[in-house]
Every structure is written in structure tokens, then in C-alpha cells.
Length: 191
Image 1: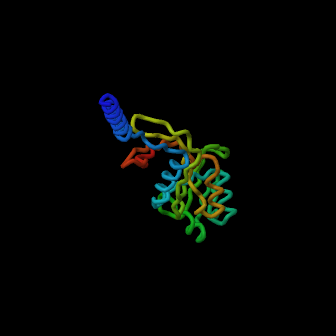
Image 2: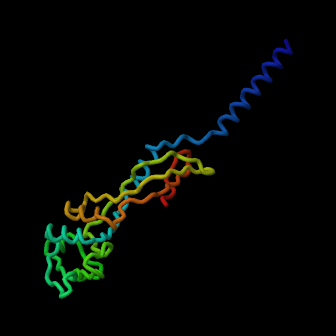
Image 3: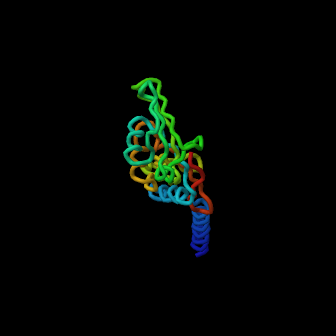
């Protein structure tokens, strides 16, 4: 009888020890792609927005004239230099980095493929997260690669079209790092 009691006592100690060990060594909860995207997007939505600069090439200049953002006011003797003045509607939509109201179009030749001028939208744009990759473990942290897009929906359709022309970077590859705080994953940084 004593032997059975000792065995039961030993079994109880082993069971309690295992239970204490199991609760003391909790593993980190899973971090899913959806949770990661939700946290990244929440950070972007909480920010005021980002100022965007738009490189305007030859096609964009033509679109800007067509949409009534600027109008040609002077053509130079070489035939390919020109000055364009912002219209009142254009001044509501964009501003020029130098603060004036005249775009000086000065390409090196009539067919300069890479010549651009810069305009700045009067409205800031928000960022969007998409293409969330697999969650990776990095020491005690989790990381996820994703694509950060500039959301152009706050801009008028004509300016959205100009912004989508060559020379504008509207997407960037980023990596988000998450850390465990009080048993829950939190977004630490986006780089």
C-alpha cells in the first residue's frame, strides 16, 4: 500500500512539473499574412498621407493640356522649347516645385525620350499594402515582404493618368518587422 501511495505521489509531482514547464514555455502565437496586412494597412491609414511628385514627360504634357491643367503660352524658335502656364483649374490640382505658375519645357532635342518636368499634386496620397509574402521568422521577430503602392484615388482622373506614365515610381518593395508584445504581435517597423 505504501508503495502505491509513493508511486501516486511521484506521478503527481511529475505531472505538475510537466504542467508548469508547459505553461512557462509558451510558444509565440502564429502571425498570418492577413494579420500582417491588417497591421501594415492600419499604420498607413493612420498616417496623414504622403506628398507625391509626378514626373511629366512629353505624353504627360499633352495630357495636361488636354485635361486643361496647363496651356501653352510661348513657343521658342527651335520649335521644341515651350512655356506652359497653369490654368486656374490646374493650379487647384498641382503646384510647381519652384512655386511659380509656368512650366518651362526645355528638352535637349525634339525627340529627347527621357526629358521630364515635375509637378506636385495639391492633395496628398495614401499608401496601400499588397502582395503580402510568407511570414518569416528572424530571431524573436517575424518579417514579411510586401509591395507598397501609392493610392492615386484622391487625385483627379487626368492627373492619375499622368502619374501612371513612365518615369514615376508608384510601387516599392518593403519589409515589415513584427515583434511580440504582451503575447500579441505588433508592427515594429516598415523598411
